[in-house]
Image: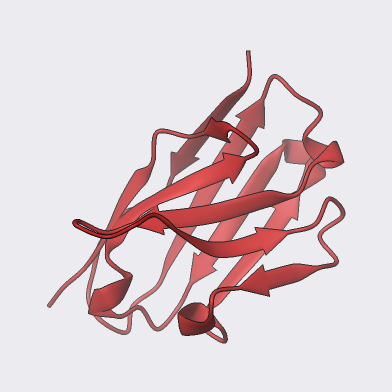
Length: 112
């Protein structure tokens, strides 16, 4: 059974940092690119970052470039999203995604 489980969300002040993790199971993790997406209330779900199978290629949504870093550890079947200099507008539910498989999401709230 394909499964993605996110963790690491929470409440943080503007300018703070969080590190999200997503553990995958049920498929050969190292064979697939992985992505992080987010959805804020009343907004469409959007792609935040994507990483290639080996981790050598990454792409980011414009608003997070220079602040977020996606990485992966294929030995641990885990993909990460390091989020620095967080802004109020980064508040959303963050999802790990591969193809049609989604995690349950983890809430990130940036507020003073």
